[in-house]
Amino acid sequence: MEVNKEFEIQQKSQGQKMRYRNFPMVPRVVYGNGSFCQLGDILMPQRKNSDAPCVFLVDDVFEGTSFVGRIPVIFSDQIIFISADEEPKTDQVDALVAKIKQDFSELPSGIIGIGGGTLLDLAKAVAIMLTNKGNASEYQGWDLVQRPSVYHVGIPTISGTGAEVSRTTVLLGPEKKLGINSDFTVFDQVILDPELTRGVEKEQWFFTGMDCYIHCIESLNGTYLNAFSQSYGEKALELCKEVYLKDLPASIAREKLMMASWHGGMSIAYSQVGVAHAMSYGLSYLLGVKHGVGNCLVFQHLAEFYPEGVALFQQMIEKHAIDLPQGVCKNLSDSDFETMISVSLGMEPLWENALGKDWYNKINPEKLRTIYEKI
Ligand code: NAD
Ligand code: ZN
Image (tube, protein in one colour):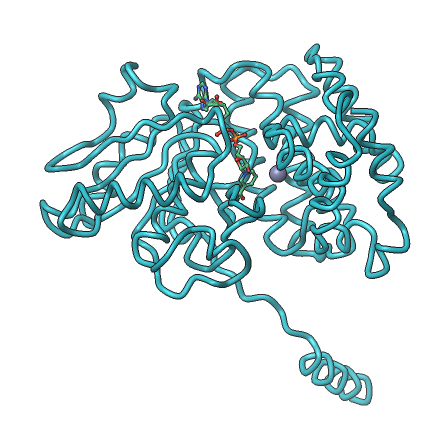
């Protein structure tokens, strides 16, 4: 009796102090090989009328392939092919929104993103900006979006980023690379069809998959970790190890990596990423290095922070004979290093997750410069 009471009091006082995040999850998801075929049926009840189209934003790697014939286009629906060579930008989002508003008299019934993290993030951002005033860069940050977005669907064709499940869309703006983090960012529907990842080239498969692996390591070793994040992070890590260290049949590996990506994304929803991501943002901001590659470039030098994670990463690099780019920071000026360091140190929640509340006593610009110089 006494113990129960004490527990109750403790709970109450904790309840008053703690504010737990209340975040949305993707409400509907279909998983399975060939499940892309269900897209037409899924969209039908969402269609408002024949003047309110579905707009499909599709990675241009699929342009001219038979896959395009499988996209369920009817009425005035539009397919827009977009290159994923560069990471998404706020002005690119603004231009797409302007085009869609110009082409149609009504708001679209749905925006469907088909591709990797680049296309998924573009689809999320376009869906938000169709119903919110101003420019996309005004919404980079946390919970700045006021109005619900247009119905939007995410269909990954490469696995790893977790963008299919996250509440952010990472955009390069005029001043910063930062996500539009909001409850309205999350997809209304996701289709997970592992078959769609069939054509991914080996190096890209490795880099995007390592994004997931690094999400797990950073989440599981972070100070923000709780049982919720841990349960997803551990599962994702187990799947990544199977995919990258065992010799699985290709179809099984595709299926497992798709689920690793999902769980990795869920793991960071309640926690954060860490040192590799903070430093990778600097590389990407200054040099346009792509997210997956940037993470690997940094992570290889982070044994001090993530000893076991880096050791396993080296095994994976060797097993798949991946050559990481060398000398990326070789010819940079002092001011270049300063830019990267300041972008990186600006990612406070990432450092706090990695090193604790007094993170600024544990890391300094010189230390970051030493790591960047090795890349
Ligand atoms: P990506 O979308 O940039 O695509 C990488 C390459 O793979 C491209 O050349 C693309 O054409 C190709 N590709 C994709 N699917 C293919 C297929 N089935 N067959 C052949 N080629 C294919 O890659 P990514 O690594 O998935 O995404 C990176 C982006 O994701 C970055 O912009 C990053 O900022 C973002 N990101 C977002 C989140 C989030 O939560 N929103 C999380 C992590 C990363
Ligand atoms: Zn990432």
